[in-house]
Image (cartoon, rainbow, N blue to C red):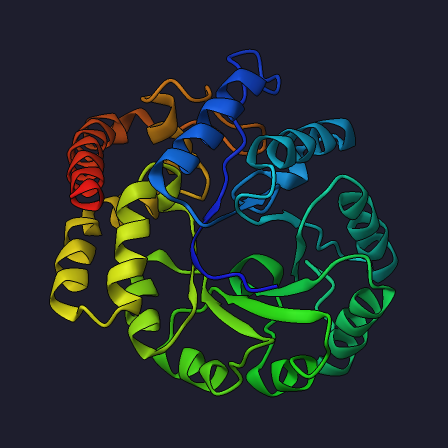
Length: 301
């Protein structure tokens, strides 16, 4: 399996009453398909996986698999603090039709490198799905170091990594591990262009929830070596990137999606976007509409 290009870490839409909004979910999936997104992640951290009941998780994934019908890869977030539970979760999403498992480092428990090696090898050895490693130390409390990734990359069932650390040196170290069977993906929107110029295979993006066409175009330009055009497009998205970091993810992205009629907020302990940011959200939403229109016109031309 090759996972590359513009991949969206999907937000999970809820109704005003806090229930799963499947109509909005389908509209979000259609938005991604129309924008040229090349893969999606269901129930990752942006999808508020920790807040989902099992039946909701299964419904979201099943609906996405049926909707995309093999046209693009569907990854499911399966990483949990326990290795046994991660294996169980990965088996479950395999039965629901996911193409690969995005497995974050075990949150909160802070395993040693030897523990991370054993954890990921156990999940991959179980063989339910191809595994994409996911490193995001700011959320999990542990860092999957490049030397550990190098050992894991040799496993035939471990097919890539989403790296959310934004240091150029970290990305450079991982890029030396790239090959036909192991892809390196940026997990940081603001530095994704730089990473792809350096050789990254693509990006797992939060911003592409609302900028699917722009992110597809950005990935195509960057991977085709069209530096000036890619940098110009990246510069136009900077305000959106900055806004998405103004409060904890996925609060800002869901505020923008709600302005498109897709979902109505987050679940506790997350809280809605502060009213102090409402005016800025409106400006960013207007910029996004214009940028998406321009991006779609460029692709059509």
